[in-house]
Amino acid sequence: MPKVSKRKVNKEAEYINNFWRAVAVLSKKEDARDFLKALLTPSEMLMLAKRLEIAKQLLDEAHYQDIVREVKVANATIANIQRSMEGSGHDGYLRPLQRIGKFRKKPSRSKSKLSK
Image (tube, rainbow, N blue to C red; front, top):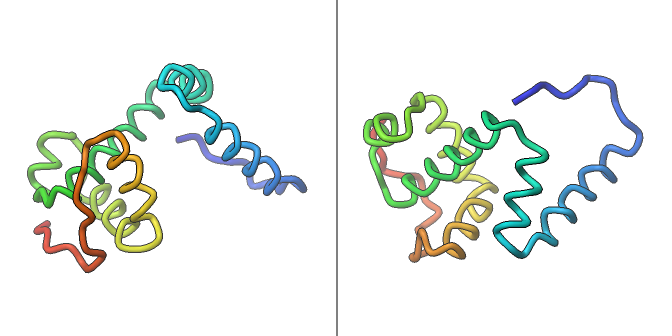
C-alpha cells in the first residue's frame, strides 16, 4: 500500500471516522465493490483479499506451507495476520467471514497450533 504522509492533519480522526461511516452504509455487494474499486488500486484490493483469505485459512487451521502455496504469500505475511488475530483483530476477521458463510464455528482465542 502507498505510504501515508508524515505531515499530521488536524482532522485525522474525523477523516478516519468518515471513512468508517462510508464503509458501514454499504449494504450491497455491488455498492461495496464500486466504492472500493474507486478507492483502491487493483494491487491494494488483491492484497486485502489475500489477507482475508489467509485469515480464513488460519481459522480453518491450515498449515503455513499450505497457505503459502495456495495464496502465494510469505510466511511473514501469514505470521503478521495470525498475530493480529490473536489480539484485537480476531473479531475483525471472524465477523465478516461468518456473515458471508465462509466460516461457521467460533474458534478459541488461544494461541494457534499452526506450524510454520
